[in-house]
Image (tube, rainbow, N blue to C red; front, side, top):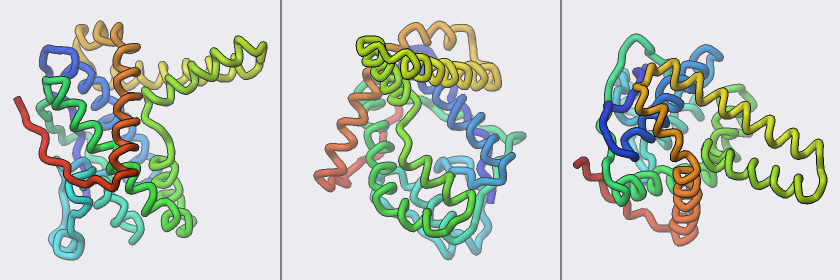
Length: 231
């Protein structure tokens, strides 16, 4: 099985450019690293190459909430690990409106949270690198929420005089920033995409709101996630 390199289609506007940044990480750098480490590359729902035997044996589920993630985890539990095809590339059209982007990200995060509840115990029982990494992915917050959490920890450490905690939190923020820069350089994004990072504080706050919405939907067991319209 293969997952080809996924990049966002270049387009103007805040949300399409933020999508380009996200794709640089999730569609290029992260799957490339997982492939080099012989871990399980996540399927993205587009650009998947599968054998007929796989298609006939496994079916998509999760009722619209991150179906490709659930499919990847079903495969991982059975020891089937897709590879990353960096030489083959596809470009996906980004959602342009705030409402559409909010609903799309809420669906993805709700699906990831629900998947964590179902898959993490089973993944941990397998005791192999790919399964452990998949469990870690499900339990860890998205990049923007991680940055917000670390900045909050740094602020508390500064107020409380915790020098070592302050330095550790800021060091981890710097490490995440380096990861982002490497991703953008690897994806060779346009100069305007780099400029869009000036709006990072607003994007981080938006992503935190997405997490809260997704958690609320998971707690209410809501599964009605319609397809995202493409303007």
